[in-house]
Length: 268
Image (cartoon, rainbow, N blue to C red; front, side):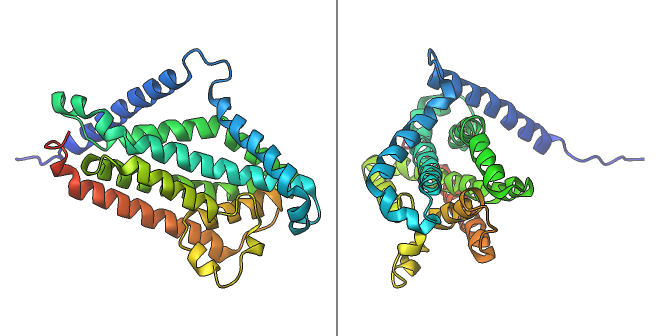
């Protein structure tokens, strides 16, 4: 009697991928914060300084959009800066990850996707340690409802999806176009201007909102502000829009990465 069993290769591949990911994430974090006094909490320094500058310049003008509360404007600016800083850092680091490890890929048989994924995962770990607890605490204080902290995870998860998709896309493109980092700086700047970071989304003219809707960070920042700063349920379409944009970016980035993967070795 012949017994048929399920092949164990896929499971072993997943386990190997997970082991590699843990090693690379640990290495990334150790190198990044070796000899650092504050470690992952340095990621909060830039948003805090920029929040102070925005408050000094725009606080009195835009506080009226936040119930005439300067404190709410400070929190709104801070949440916007956390999002854009995470996006900029994680995707910029992922952009060069495949090329930077090209010599390793030529020597050892490794999945090329492990490098952008490890960079993004390291940034997620940093975010979970430093920024996310603060966001959840603010959410609990402003809303008074612990369930809002769980709701906050929806746009945060959307942010991770967007960054992962763009990380896959840019890391693959960089293999072919080595001038990409200079162009990507301009892309990040445009996203920064078109995201409601230091200004409320309510001041955007109606004729411009369709263009801003193309920015995947726009619904994410707006949803986080409604939940964490205003203590309100976000617009359902806005929340689902953030998830949809995240899934679209992930599908696009992963699809392009897999499509171009076979050409990497000739160029690394």
